[in-house]
Length: 250
Image (cartoon, rainbow, N blue to C red; front, side, top):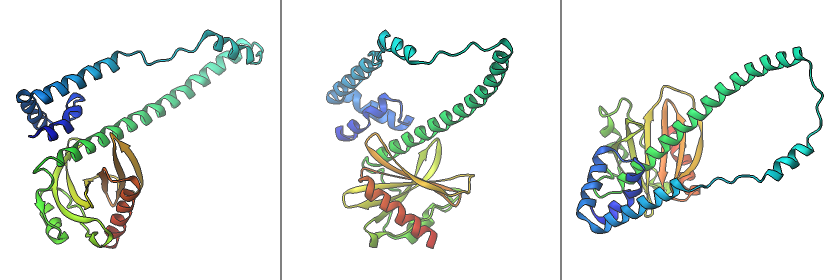
């Protein structure tokens, strides 16, 4: 592993985002490289300082007084009304809390998976990790996945639209083996991760930015797709639209 490759993964190592194999590679490099050891130490100190910093802002007491003074005086309700309101409020609060917890958990799952996608994309940029099958022919790449995954991902040729097929490989997202179809747009690599899902509904595409990388996510025909790249958001959205159209037509 070179210093350039290790530097890309130092933050991921600190945040515990690397799998055991790649974490071991980075640690072995650091043990023999004074430059990367110093970088890791500096990043670690920065991480600790931010964790210890008091970044909360306490509102002045005068603000509370002004808010309370602006509230209208409320009449005192009778005891029975208070009890009824308490029971109804408790039931509604329980329902709302349940829904809120589900939303929070779903959001955390989505963010964790997006983080996995970025980590897998970064790993692929290391020398020798980009493809397991190197080919610009979709009829070579697609059959390669047969028998290696439960469902072979669709592979389409988008060269005429400006996105050149490079090949494919197996990768890991959310602790599961997924297919990765690799495209190139000028000097930019696009990793299209494809995983089987039990949900057969089609979901509209979402475009998010995670750790400086753009990710376009959508679901279609029982498959989840994540297109990850440092390509700008507009061109990545264009890639996703063209892939969806070609996959539907095939």
